[in-house]
Length: 210
Image 1 (cartoon, helix red, strand yellow):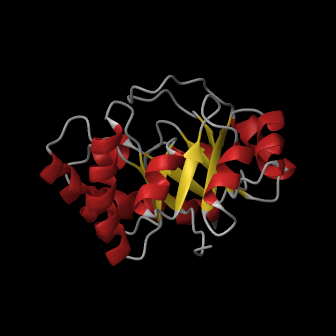
Image 2 (cartoon, rainbow, N blue to C red):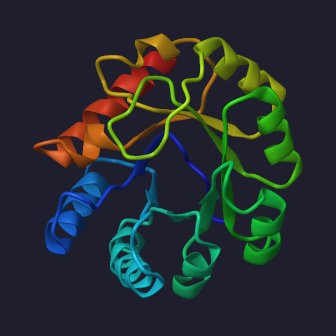
């Protein structure tokens, strides 16, 4: 399995952009220091998803950043992505792990301690926990308290990342939570300068960890 660094986990949203602009923003985020990228496409056909995934993967490979495909194991396998991420309503972690194999990354969403333990026991390599704040993405959000986040960190030995409405000005709530990294969508994707946004958010988190 590729070395897993979840410090600055960037989740994409191509909805507002042309393909060219989307890919430009992804590359700028790579230049800004993101350590993991998840391609999340809820409304594309399989063929469209594979096409965009291939183009995104060309970029992430150049920067040696693992590409995680959201939800779709078939797409991940089709382009030989480094991993897949499954949510609570998606394929079970156990099934995703079986299909992806031991060498690939499998991530999971967890909002409670029991969900976190189950995902770990089924073979997840990392967890995305949240939403910490309300988000502007189209995904349905259920808020998770920082106390629950801390309990999850203590309950499982795998990497835990906070997700949901996080930006460089509000991540202070995560201080001393013990998490391994943060996930961001809008804070990077919608920024005027995605490279700068990624760099500043990563720096803010690393300072928080000290």
